[in-house]
Length: 337
Figure 1 (cartoon, rainbow, N blue to C red):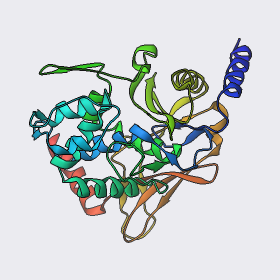
Figure 2: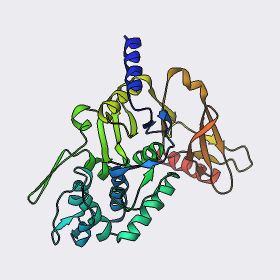
Figure 3: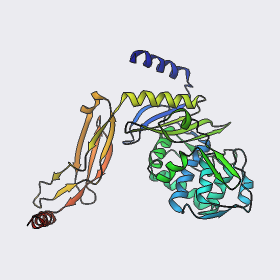
Figure 4: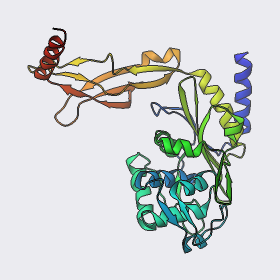
């Protein structure tokens, strides 16, 4: 049965656009499980709004009221049709931005929070910090006639990996219908209806970019991110890729903060510990490709996880000195007296 399903999957991929850019990423580790043209820089249309949403969430309160101004006259296409002079909370506008892909909402958010130019600068600064080195933003909406936003499937997967850690982002992008005043906005991400494991997503389209889709899904404790650029059958592609890669991989706890311990061999006898776990999706025959190294230096102590001799994750190590360790032990002993 599995051979039949795999053959069907291969046939499906053969029928998809060979020029499309596609990435399937493990959201825990950032490891790319499948890719096609992943580093080819392309226009990303309204999936730009993932970054717009994040910059707004990280720099302004959801309850902040924003007044719509003349900025909405500068855009066209996908709109939520808010009117000049109306007042909305940032939360309202972010729903209009991410559900119905309102270009007018994008302009109001960028202009009335940080100021338009500062907002665009923050989008690019954030992209660089996330390692999106083949990405550039010139506007908050994704229209690409006068200004253009470029990225790659890999960079957009990195962005989504970061975005889904934000609870407000997840709440907004998983909402299917939002009502405010006399407006009703519906989510254009059809995968929310068609695939029950979907947790987030944003679609985009312009004539120049073709269809763009960034999505995330969670099943059995595993979370995957899929990006496709210039692929017409985007919803079916994502659904089939999710089913395939959820089935192929298992989740492993590579670093366990509760059991990890390391004692330095130098004279001070310091002990080191972790504050976070690190999980990773692996096939059964891939565990032997894992290697864990402890790196101690003056500035930054960390554990690095290598897969197939490539560093895939670094986790900070925290030091517990010999003196503090003795104090902790004495404290426990006194407690039991």
